[in-house]
Length: 67
Image (cartoon, rainbow, N blue to C red; front, top):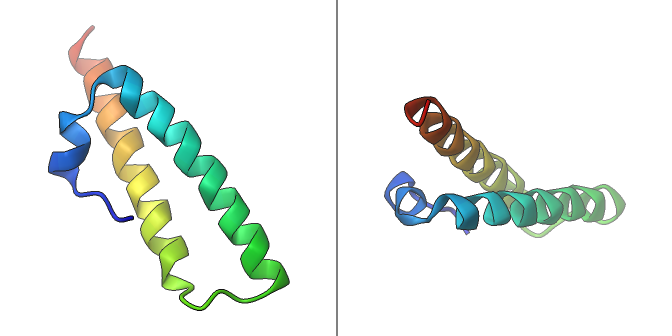
């Protein structure tokens, strides 16, 4: 689940945008499920949040370098 920055950089920009959207949906669902019934491993939420941040950081980096 936890993607490394090297794996994120290998993705194309379109794939990265799609993946961010999917991960955000997954994150929101996980938080909702956790609020109803605690997850076995709540640390997954933290890792997913950090992965989303890494992806958004890479997208922003690409956006700034293409201008």
